[in-house]
Each structure stands twice: as C-alpha cells, then as structure tokens.
Length: 190
Length: 335
Figure (cartoon, rainbow over the protein chains, first blue to last red):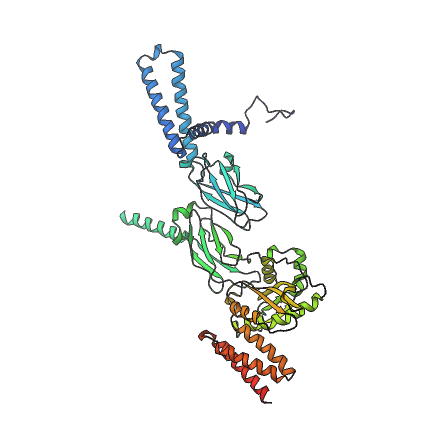
C-alpha cells in the first residue's frame, strides 16, 4: 500500500516487505557463503552452511555454558551475544530449510531469434554449473533444468549458450526459482 | 493382514507401472515425407537413447523403461532430441501430466539450412516451380558467370544444361533405376552466392531430387579460345539418401564447343562413377548418328571398348549399358 504521492508507506508492511523479511535468513546465508567462497573455501553450499551452523552452535554452547553457572549476574553484553548467536543459529537453520524446500527444477522459456542449439544451465554462487538437462525446445523455447537446491544452494545464475554465440549469464531472483520466467537471448557472435 | 498389505503393494506397483507414459510420434520432412532412422533421444536429468524412427517415420517408447519412476514423477517434461545427419536437430518438449498419456508428437525436420531460412521473396519465385512429391526433378540454378560479357548468359546456361543433363541425369537414373524418371528443370536467376545451404533449402522447398549450380568463366590460359572453366556443385536434397553423399562437387573444364573432354571424363569418373562416361558416349553417339559420321562412330566405338575393358567387378550395370551402346554403334556402322 503506497500513499498517494507514490512514496513507499512506512505505517504498514506490504506483502513485499514480509517476503523480504522471510527471505532475510536465506539472504544472510547467501552472503556468508559468498564471503567464504571469496576467501578460498569453495565447497557445496550445504557443506559450508552446515560447517557454519556447527561453528555457531559450538560458540552458542560455550556461551550458554558460561552463562548457566551464574546467569543472574551475567553482563548485558554476554547475554546479548548469546542471544545473537542463538538468532544466527536459527537463521542458518531456517536458511538451510528454506533452501531445501526450493523446487529442484527450473522451468522457463528462452525467447530468441533462433533457438537451434540453445542450452541453459544453472550456476551456483561460485559460478559453477550445478544443473542437468537444460536442452531448449527448438520451437517454443521451453526448457526444464534440474539441480539440487538442498546440496548446491539456490541457483544464482541462468547461463544461456548457443553454438557460435557468446554465453549470456542472467541473475536469477529468488522468486524466479518458483515460477516460469521468460529469458531473452540475443546471439552475439563470438 | 499380510495378504491385504501385499495386495496394496501390488496395486501400488501396478499403478506406478501404468503411469509410465508411452511417448510416440512421427517425424516428417518439409513436404510431409516420413523420415526413417532419425535418432531419438529422451532427456530429463540425463539423456538416453530410444529406438530410431521406422520407415514410416514413427517412433514409440515407454518412458518407464528409460527413466526411474522417481525421475519421471519429478520431471515437468521430457525433452525429445531428434537428430539425423543433413537435418537441423530438433528438440521437442513433451509435457508430462500425472495420469495422462501425452499426445503423439508430430515433428518436422528441416534440412541443414532448411527451407525455413528462405526469404519470402525467394519463396515467391520458387512457388511457380514446386514439383509434385515423388516426381524427383533436378533443378539447375543458372550459373554465376564472370568475364563472359561476350557470351549470352542464357545460351551459356542452355549449353551447360545440355552438358550436365547428359552426365547427371544418366548417373542419377543409374542409381535410382526403377524410380520415377529424372528430369532437369531450369530455375530463373536467383540469389545464390555459392551458398550450399541456400541451394539445399531451395531443393527442399521445391521437392527436388537435387540441385545443380556452379560458377563459369572464360579461361584464357588454356590456349583454346572459347574454353569455359566450370565449377559445378551437385547437391542431393536430403530425402534422397540413396544417392549417397549429400553434396557432390565437380570441378571440371568444359570446352564450350566440344563435349569430349578427357579431363572432365577423369574427374567425373572419379567423383560420380563411370556412368558419367557412358553419358558422354551416348551424347557423342547421338551427334555422330545424326551427322552420319562413320569416323566419329568408329572413334566412339573404340572409346566405349576401352571403357568396357577398364570396368571393374562393381561396374556390372555400366558394362550392360556399354554393351547396349556398342551394339547400337555397330548397327549404325553396318548400315
């Protein structure tokens, strides 16, 4: 709901905002996994996420243990830190679960002048191909490509390729993973 | 209790088996001719090979034998990948709906550089020449002629047509013996630019057995005025698989004023088999017979005998044809 002047309203939460809030743990998890990948820890998303969850749970366990001895006299920062760790652990777990509930296939349609030899594949956060299938119907441009979101994390990029053309990478929004989208492909010779 | 459980499991298995979709379809060419031996592959997560199309262009397979029930259950569709050399590959998505058998697919394959690539202007010109399916004509696209301003392109094309007709038609008839009579038709000048794919597309659109085109130019270096260098291309349109290679190139050297050309003979024999040589002999015989030239007839007879002596075990048809021709020459000489 937007006010008449067109600016986003602040007094009520629209459906987009709630969707963003629900997506927050997943987005945070994506960021963390990307950071880990950047420092050279390139493993499938689930491995990194579980590793992260174990680290956070260990830290949470240590923090809770320290608090348990005398929680009444615990300092505010240590209480806040423990609460934050609990929230992070919950966020990671929620992110993993949300990831696992994503469809294991992406359906869509490529719109191109010539569909001969056009293929699609899904790339993960490392830019690695994680999908199978991916042939495109040469008449309609429809395709199905399959992957494992639970293991690979959500697909980040749709790569469209065709013989004699430069490959085109297009980012996939979270919402597009659950619906059929149309993807434009213009062949640039290369 | 155990019986009830077993019955339930049996019913479940039966349901699962019945749910495996039967995928079927027909593959045809542009003109509706069924295409046999098309490689049929099915893709979900992996790609597996199904049985190829039969003589009627039909294919059929049980998806349950190629993919696991889990894979089929989780698949939104099954991509059919249809390929055959000389044709553009086609991917055809069959949507899978639980409990419903997919409708049979009717897939059309275009030749590589198929008729779909033709412009509307090209099609408008070609429409007047489209042949009835099965009549199997050859079409001659006027040669691109350069450096022959002194010659009338029409007469050059007529001359080339006369030369090529003898060679190609005889050769093709020898191969498709028993089939429809092969004829040669001349197309009006069209954009070509030596584009093989375009020629093939023309042929496909015209229902042609083959297309002939080429390039001609006066060759001043040969020391024989009026000699025409010709580079011919004979394209067999993909449906005529029995003719072997889809594209045959003939680089020849046709004297404009004479049919006999040893160089051309050698090249044609090497490329197209010896029936081309026979065609030349038939042509020469026709001319010598009309002119009642006994010297020419004797020369032709000697030439035919030499050709017969050089025939190999696989040239049985050629030898029969040579014998028929030698007998005809003998009858003329005896008159």
